[in-house]
Image (cartoon, rainbow, N blue to C red; front, side, top):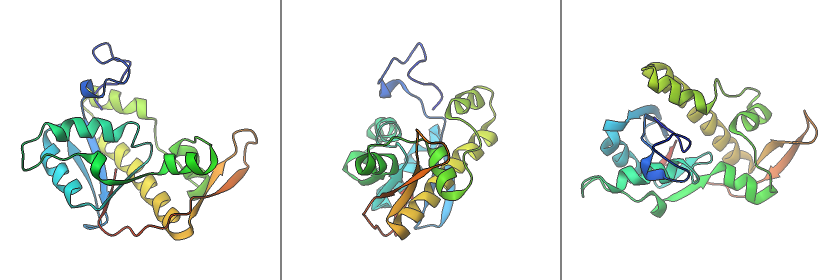
Length: 187
């Protein structure tokens, strides 16, 4: 987003005041990563319309509410309610199965051997500085990590979650649901 809850013009949990900078997605249907800027929300809504399943990381807490505000303001032909779509939020799946909350970076390191290239707070600065290519690269890297973790989740039914008390140790968390990725969109 261009701003955050701590921005003076926003306020905590005011999703309607958050402005999209870039949305990175991966479409299994198209086998392609893409980025959409704020003025491209109708095209993004069409991609989500076609998706049977929407996958993200901590997406039900942040991405879905923000995007839904945009999608609800679109014209009749593009309007979309993401809350009515089947969704998998990998962080929620882990929390429900284990009671553990973990960052995308730590989860990726534990399962993939590598993590994020930056921090979410840097995205707002990249947008403010007009560094759109860097911002898109950062967002798509997060989407790539989410995709790889989702693919592992589908394949194995579990992920390794780092132990917060014992550095270097992981817990195998059985997530249980095996889901086909056909016609899914990740963000």
